[in-house]
Length: 366
Image (cartoon, rainbow, N blue to C red; front, side, top):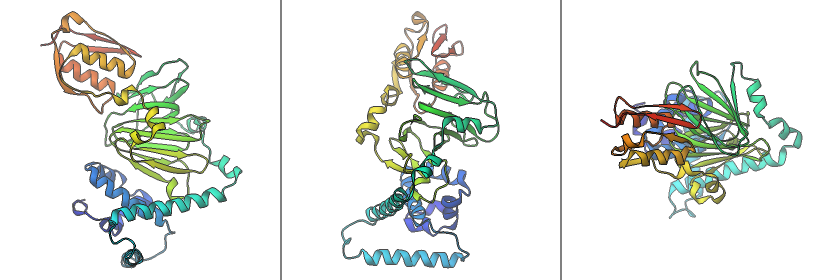
């Protein structure tokens, strides 16, 4: 890991056998992802290198590390030579991004013209398929109302489940991972736990997170599955084996999104949600509000939470009218937000939650 800290160029990653194994086989996945998350600029460089490895996507053959490095070096030299005349005033980064995009587009185009309808039908995964394949007992929540419903999981993660949507999850998360299954649309705020990643299965897409907030839109009859990241970073991958490099996985940072085209089985990455009208229109109030508070009356903070989560918060207004808080409640589920508020007000303050109804019990701020 210490060696990776010195990586500043694309070639550093391309010539690293451990990086190649991570991209191709997910070796040391947790370590690589945690290291990548530490720095946004580093994450961007990692993404560029991953695109190169995936775009090359050749079958494994028994060659030595020396031969592999030599082949990569020759490929790199050919790239620079063939583009020397036309790209004198263009940065290498721009060309790399374009080249990777062209390669991935070519692979995706080939898949589009060679897959027949029967193959496409086989690639479809339903919510029912996912739930039936899960051996552990699951609780299913269905939102048949006209308003979003707040769901709190055993790890304090929270989900705003939209109308005509449903989600299945275990009563408690046992083992080394946390898994839920979504049909429809939900906004997720996940409690951080680096030792137990969180997975959302939605149609043909798997979203992996450690602690962040994001929206998934995955209705069964819609042609696409959209994943929009509000804070943190997620990895989005296909639930199907595919030779198509662009159908395998995508890393997303804050305000980025991925659209999985179900028929053609590939990902389209959107680098800025605010620049995509259809995606930005799908975001809700909770994704547009700020949860950074500086010397703000407690009753106003409660109103912000009510507006964001569409809940009702009953609190003793008289006892808390002179209470002000300065705190950051960003990038955390609602139960954690409430816990921080109560702890800030004093040991005699606590909360009770019953669905979309919250009661604050307090004798005032200390």
